[in-house]
Amino acid sequence: MQDLRDSVTADVAAERLDRSPHELRRLLRAGQVCAHRRAGRWFVPMSEVRRLQRLAQPVGRPFSPGSAWALLAMLAGDDPTGLSAPRRSQLRRHLRDADGHELAARLGRRATRRLVYAHPSMLGALAADPRVVLTGLAAAEHAGARLVGADDDEVEGYVAESDIAGLYAAYGLVDAETVANVVLRVVDDAAQVPRRSGMVAAPVVGLDLWESGDARACEEGQGLFTAAVEAFRAR
Image 1 (tube, one colour):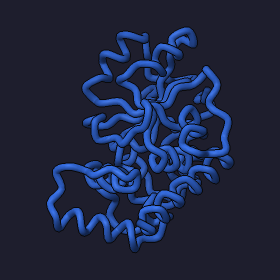
Image 2 (image 1 turned 120 degrees about the vertical axis):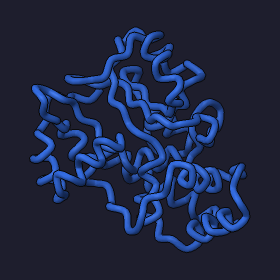
Image 3 (image 1 turned 90 degrees about the vertical axis):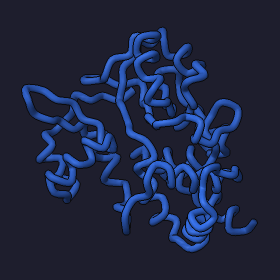
Image 4 (image 1 turned 45 degrees about the vertical axis):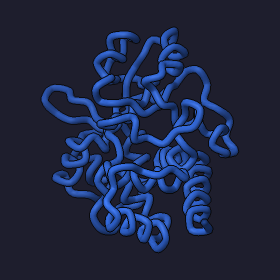
């Protein structure tokens, strides 16, 4: 569970992140930074600030969501559909040649993030809902990370934009302002998310853990993602 009461204004967050207020507002609009609005001002939880401080800034333009998921599908050993032969070749070249840190940093636009609160009694049912593709700590051990699975006080998963309203209604979800026990990673089409047994595939789990802001999870996530890149290059 994340305590969001320790928050700073967007301008202070931008200063601590060594980014311009304009750039931080762009990330807010893109759903890559979670924040809440009070009295007409945006406040960014310090947990988000610490998470962003650990992220590498992309060198070059971030991949579009479609390209990001095609790359991640390739890393997972799947064959992404709908790609032209030249684009497929180009993405394979990125996977063969790009530095792992650089590659991970350019995949940030694959989804938008929402920090949400659900009554603890609803978390088990939410995690079991087929519309939610679990990731993060809940999927870490399944993906091969040396981390204990998440307690039953937090859910993290990928969901389709079209399913958001239904999930909010079914489980009484609300956008978090003080505490968050659900992280929703929202995508246009959940079918593009590579998965294994109801959880996202190992390269995606690794990337999500790497971006989590928790030191141990970051280390394990980096290892998972790097191993997937090395396995792809060895094929």
